[in-house]
Length: 233
Image (cartoon, rainbow, N blue to C red; front, side, top):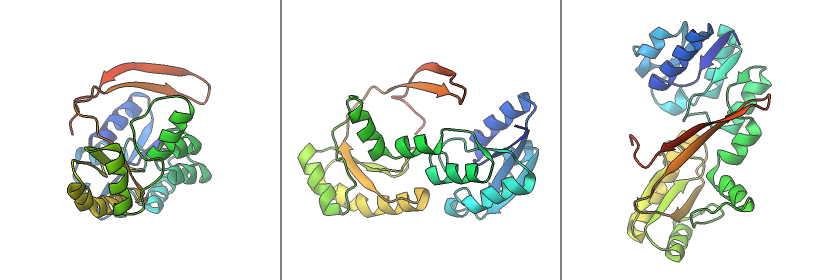
């Protein structure tokens, strides 16, 4: 790879820019009107304006990002995390345009980027999951029925969500009914998918993650474990 377009913003983009520079790889930043004066825009070798401040019109604007990559001659796109990083259609579109997508294959994203699908795959593999529904809840009444079955408190979650967006703790039916429509709206705006589901909320969890990275050549390594019970948000 000679030039990488970074389909993200802020600190995420800055980290990718630093790594690319250390490897002698040129970088392209994309930015909205609100971010034009941020450090990541100045630090990249090139920068392309992709739209107004609302995320759906800029950092989720697939056509604008693909257009920026092609106009600058970028041969790879790094999505960072959040935004389009777990969007199967975006990853497939990048590949179809002959550009390298730095991340999982579209097939893997399709399996694991959607929480309901990921739950089913894990259950088939014999991995225990938090009690919850197996299919999207189409109405608030259906969500309330599932919550009553598994018991409050519950977490109402966007199936396509990530980064804490599109989820809310509901400790009773009233709070669930108040949250349902607004969360569906956020999920649709941020991820283009308003499918919602309900799962049991675990009080005072101990959340440990093991990050595993692999490449197309069969090399796999783990990056040790990390304590995620405490995070910025």
